Image 1: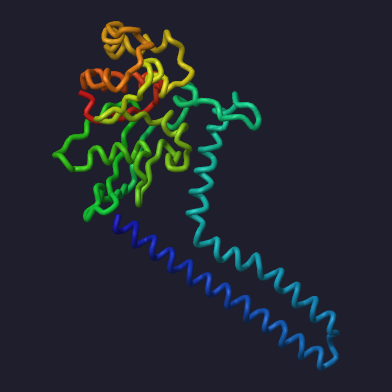
Image 2 (image 1 turned 45 degrees about the horizontal axis):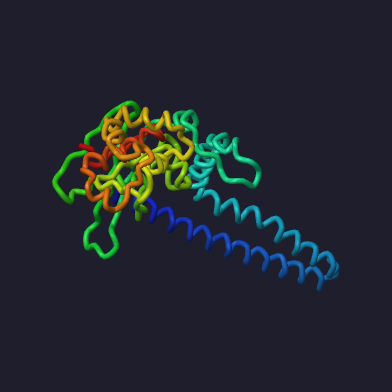
Length: 285
């Protein structure tokens, strides 16, 4: 990360020097044209109108030269932006079901599965407001598709911070998170959550029915899909034991009697309904 910071500093310094050189070149060239043109006018070899035309033509010809000098040093950044645009254009079909001017359509499972697979974290730095030391200090790793990775470490090592940063719940001060060539920071929350699911170690249960809580991850899910996810995660039996089953409203009084296992299974079922290609579980046991 130090080498990357030094390289970026050198790049910015070169850009500023080229910018100053381009500005000086333009000013000197324009001054030279005016001086030589005025001399030719005095000698009678050039008319005042031709001098004005030469001055305007010179400024027109210098503009692309100046821009070329400035863009030369920014070429890597420009190419990286173009790659990001190309990757985001591949997700255009996700909104095909939305009407013109209407809300964006939910991200389908097929569209999410077609996204780039490898998860890459590049020099992630995260510092909480008011904290003396950063929670993440230049973390980098690559998680290949189809693998299950267990992140271990003592309390306060940054495990939860890393998962929340990858999920987009905390914004990194430096570094990036990619799925293939796609920078997740450039996606809206709906698309990001469709690609990267997150279940925290303290799931939030809303004052609504069980079905409404499950549909937070998939608003259009049918009741059969809700029961399928509940069965898969081992939640169905506990839901059937509730007074109205899926339609039981989880009031504050009822939530006080819910076990931690029920809350965790409810959050896991939400994630299964969305079925993201990458799933982050914070202390799921």
